Amino acid sequence: MNALNGPPLSRSRAALAGAVALAALALPVLGTPYLVDVGTQVLVYVMLGLGLNVVVGYAGLLDLGYAAFFAIGAYTTALLMVQYHVAFWATLPVAALFTAISGVVIGAPTLRMRSDYLAIVTLGFGEIVRIAATNFTFTGGPEGIYGIPHPTIGEFVLRSPRAMYFLAMAFALLVLAGSYNLARSRLGRAWLAIREDETAAQAVGIYPVYFKLMAYILGAVFAGAAGSFFAVKLTAINPSSFTFIQSVTILMVIILGGMGSLPGVILGAAVIVILPEALRGFDRYRMLAFGIGLIILMLLRPQGLWPSRIGQIERRAVALSEASAAAGRAVDTASTPE
Amino acid sequence: MRFGGLVAVSDVSFDVRPREILSIIGPNGAGKTTVFNCITAFLRPTAGRILFEGQEITGLRPDLVVKRGIARTFQMIRLFPDLAVDENVMIGLHARTRAGTLDSLLHTPLHRQEESWAREETFRWLTFVGLESHAHYRARELAYGNQRRLEIARALATAPRLLILDEPASGMNPAEKAALVQLVGRIRDSGITVLLIEHDMSVVMGISDRIIVLDHGIQIAEGAPEAIQRDPQVIEAYLGREDEA
Image (cartoon, rainbow over all chains, first blue to last red; front, side, top):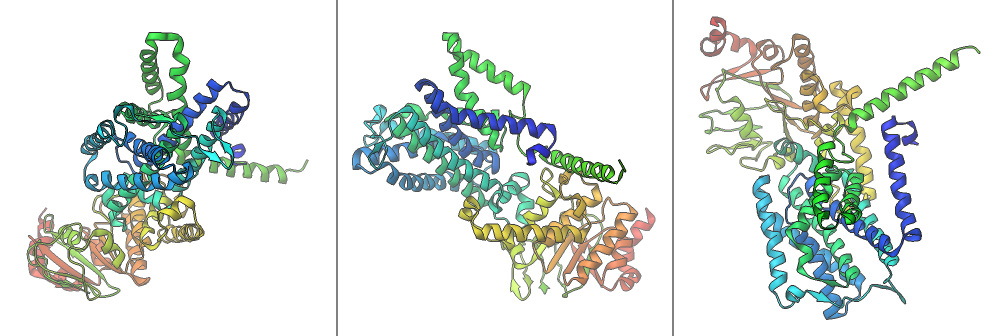
């Protein structure tokens, strides 16, 4: 309804969103196992991007070690399933708890820092987690953990690429719904206020420390969920999946898509995963081409592929004035005798 | 209400009486904003005490001072410039709503109930300051005088019993100033005490019930507007200096 009444820009966006949703549904039915697997990877980055978006996009805090939370979720699920034979679903609340605690651990000491210091400390945290996972024996050292069982629903074992795709979709939709709700909530407004002007936020009764911590915790839990899924999808994990480059890649997802924008994060995740796959023809120059592609994209659309709220308000105002103009025309037409 | 000796400034001690408009005037650098920052806990006084409704609030966190019922505006306007006008006011309702993290994540009935209340309350305050037709503009798009009014609306949304305005008329044209005087009067009439810093004498003399004069961090006079206008010390320190200029 709204999309039809809105200005042309939002109509084209609605069409794009519809096309993406249709493609996401058609993929597991029509796609080859390879394509379905690429789709699953996109969904993992959607989860990670949405989680980091809470920290960076909503609350305006930089995090260069975000892969650490991804790792903690993955290792928690992997260890519980392999060592203690816990069912996949039962590992999820434990992973959420552990990642939430790690969110506090990274959040609490860094909350009074400004962005550049925050970047260094979070980067350090990411490296500590990765190096710890490489050196501890209980995490399997550099080889990591393998033989992670497939998740089951009753008798049914989720093993095929298609089953994993649907599981990823379920996770991603939950994270998406949570992110959507957060953006339109008391908590989301507190984050916006802190991001825009921390002093003014305090002057209306917001305690920034608490809400920044909450951003880290929620971001961590979202990444943890992605990690839990990642562990059962690959059935083997090792520290090389949780490097600094991984953190940067997730950050790239949201910068590319448009900070704070949910459709943007989805598009960004798609580009980050699909572009390197599409460039396989370049062989040795594939990552070079990928890098150049990203630079070109950012030069063409520095605000991101699907930027968020900034600017949205004018569009709303335009939509309003167009609506009232349309209403005026309708009245004119009605009062004009045929 | 009692504010005792704020030594951070030097030696200032005054009471604010319920439902009055009390102005603090004084030349630049007299310490007016410092006094305000101490009251709202953006600065911690090195000595002295601040009491609000009989309770000590000295050195509390700024957000807790707001929850006690004191709201403020800033000398240099501090809005959330890229957010919509109505969002600015809605954020002012933060301390009066209590939906937590899970409520926000899941949009529980409590959250939904609070949100619809918040939208009504936001509209009420926007209407009170006359900005209801600008609700969907970005704050930075408002004219200067309207930005001041929005900042006041955001402060009022916290439901203060004491509202502290730091030079609200600065940079306003005469028409905007007249509207401001009228607005501040309506705020007082609604039962809110107003503490005001202002340079503009027409504004100060027009609306103040009482005036306190600071010079070099020292309180040199206190009284009704007519008495202040006649006070020789004040004329020398402040008004007289302006006349010479």
